[in-house]
Picture 1 (tube, rainbow over the protein chains, first blue to last red):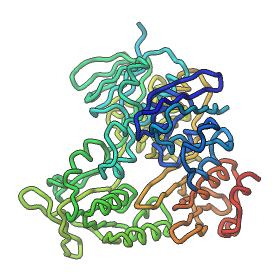
Picture 2: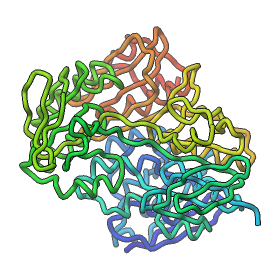
Picture 3: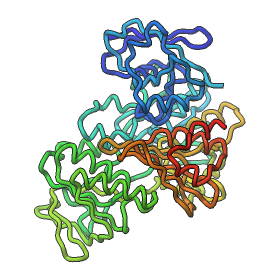
Picture 4: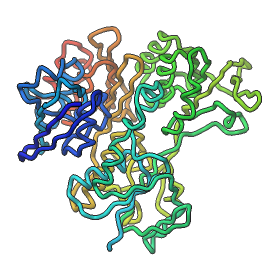
Amino acid sequence: MANITWIMEDGSEISAEVKDGLNLMEAATANNVPHIEGECGGCLSCATCHVFVDPDWFAKTGEIDDIEDTMLEMTDVEREDNSRLSCQIVASAALDGLILRVPEPE
Amino acid sequence: MAAPIVIVGAGQAAASFISRHVALGSQQPVLLIGDEAHPPYQRPPLSKKYLLGALERERLFIRPLEWYADQAVELRFDTRIDSIDRNLKKIVTSDGESVEYDKLLLCTGASARSLPADIGGTLDNVFTLRSIADIDKMSSQFQAGRKLLIVGGGYIGLEAAATSRQLGLEVTVLELADRILQRVAAAETSNYFRDLHSGHGVDLRESVRMTRLLGEDGAVRGAELESGEVIDADLVLTGIGSSPNTELAQAAGLDCDNGIRVNEICQTSDPGIYAAGDCTSFLRNGQQIRLESVQNAADQGDLVARVLAGEAVTYTALPWFWSDQYDCKLQIVGLNQGHNQTVVRPGANASSMSVWYYRDAELLAIDSMNEPKSYAFGRKIIEAGKHPTAAQVADPATDLKALAMS
């Protein structure tokens, strides 16, 4: 299990206990986090699960592969150094306490 | 109490409608009625991870079951709708219950075509692939060493072929046209996937007409070809396209044309009834089209929620699709209908390339195989209304990102 917190642009927060093995796009839609859509189900084709990872946590979320790196170019809100597609982050005890910021498209 | 928004059909379009309805803070109650035993789920993984046994059923669900209750959305499963009374704004379930609606949203989807009974279409171990129930019926039979015959070399058939090879089945694919994917892709894309499947040991036969399935004790045992050749099979999967589920709409007198006709706000010919997803047909660039895709279902469902909330929006989404076969990720953006030229852009390695479709100088669509840059930047290029030349696209040195941003 990992406790994950999503912080919206207006400062509101949603926290949830996420089972190991679930990806954080699934966890976000299950917990009604706004602006995380995950239309393609996590197969790196839609870029609708973009998050900014708290810099302290970024390294722990794992490597960005070439496909994710490319798909991050087509997010609605422009990528930053700490951008990830949350379908590629998988919950585990190592991520307990993770904080994600959710960008809000215009 | 005011009547609810009633949604008939619990697929992607319904889920996207509800998600947007909730996100917009709309207070009107929603009742979702589906004829399957599950809340809305993702269909694309059915032919891949779910058939492979690598994904639990609950992970297919677009939102967990409890989510709907939390949003005060009422769900009814295993319920068919027999008729719509447009004057009284009621629908009648197959149990005879009347349900009033304020607005009705038809998300009835499409059904897989099956082979006629008189050529063996109803024999045991002949399957179609469209629903969780379809996979649950077939998956225990998909065991290593068994012989699977796939009728139809479209995306569903090819995805099932890839998964079945991974499971260790012997796979033959029959395609009536002179090449697989003939209806949906250029020859260059067909050639790529022919090589991919042949390389994984699939016996792929094109320009082949099957005359009938052969049975023994009620179960399929093979297929007879027009040439007289018989192909042995323990299992048959038909991937020969699908038909929109328009019966309910037609019986209610709604305009239909290879789908329930909708306008640019997904409204049917009855202004109180909307439709979204695989069941709809609509005008795009002067052509009446029907799309079977997650993108279209999701975007149309989302749009209807916005329209009902009073937003002034119209449907202009750019279509996109994907398919995963073995280690190939195919990503498609745009619609290639009407193209008169294709340009191949070589990829970074032997298993990657993209095919760019043009009508004269106008870029219409891109098939990108293990070449996400062509998909991601190509999508930006098309969305921006840019039309790079064939020579630019064909040159691997051309920086697509720069083209997209310029």
